[in-house]
Length: 282
Ligand SMILES: [Zn+2]
Ligand SMILES: [Zn+2]
Image (cartoon, rainbow, N blue to C red; front, side, top):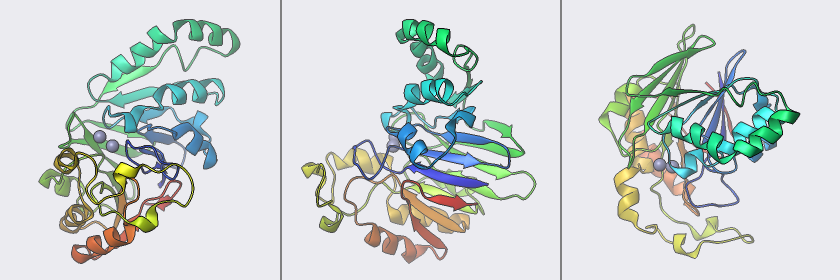
């Protein structure tokens, strides 16, 4: 399978990183994990035919993971020609879809005169819970409840034929259960939100958030209770025997060289700093 990192940022908007989103591509299918801000535009930048995406997994309902939901649903259907959609997610996923039918009722009346209604008026929702499992094109997708500020799931995708395994931690503090979940994974894309600041990472032009020009971001306790550092990520990857560790979920202006150095202190495998558009062969 191939995994493309669509967005690798955090709730703080930057021009360099979109909100969290990943595309998983098997031989015949393509599905989306999370749908953070700017997802649709990044899918276009990566020349991904997102009208083909008929399954969307939302790991949790934080805005940096779902804010482009309505944009994705409308454009993948109207412009992309998508004919069906199943949305998997935690509690309130059905509310997200039903709210769309409320808020955009007149908009949908208008658009379904122009485009076929299949794929927009018949969206399915599936509740994810701990141990949830489903299969898409010979790949098993399973969920693990992780420890974040709200109900959140890590996801694992396993090729049933080859055993190749990809794990996405979503947002979580360091959690022993994640080690078992990611055991022997080929690729682990792991929350490493807690990281040092670097003045070199501040762009020369473009908008700058002054309050993030520091090691400790604004209200850092909330961050530290709900996310991992690069060292935490490396401990998880090392204990799990992961082959490639990808650090993601970056606040603005982090020192990614130092984060890589800290990760390699306890992890012998390959360490990758996530970037929007990065393609990973699993
Ligand atoms: Zn979150
Ligand atoms: Zn997040």
